[in-house]
Length: 196
Ligand SMILES: [Fe+2]
Image 1 (cartoon, rainbow, N blue to C red):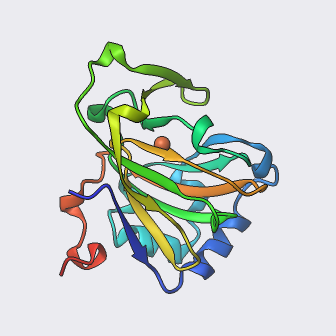
Image 2: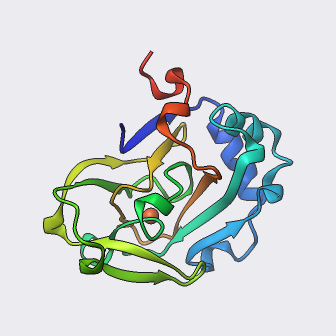
């Protein structure tokens, strides 16, 4: 199926503005994964409506606010999958750019071959204490780049290798919705995926 899929949402600017109002004051200094319970954002009725159009809000596991420091270049950003294996991943996440997302992108890759688990380099996500699987450049090939704009959110398969960049001298903030059981491509309305 897809590695990622852009989704056009006409009232996204209004939803984004409200989400930003619900973020803690120090969010720009909180680099990495900031995990929130869905209840933190549940008063935003238009957001809840949007999420419910993809998969039930009540099945959300986490809402993660990903804060990427400036100057994350191709060389210093690991190619990784979220979770310690594709089996333990959240699979499809729904991401909305909140701040300073216009000039950066996430690169998506396919694996050329499946490397053995113990050959992979692992690093720990300090917030969740979960290992991430990383891949070397020669193990993957690029399939596309995820960009955000004010009316474009993205569905992204976090069980496939990807890498975040942030070239501008600004902190990038993206919000990511993840479900349990994980969202799979075949559950998503074909109209949202643009294949009908
Ligand atoms: Fe990731």
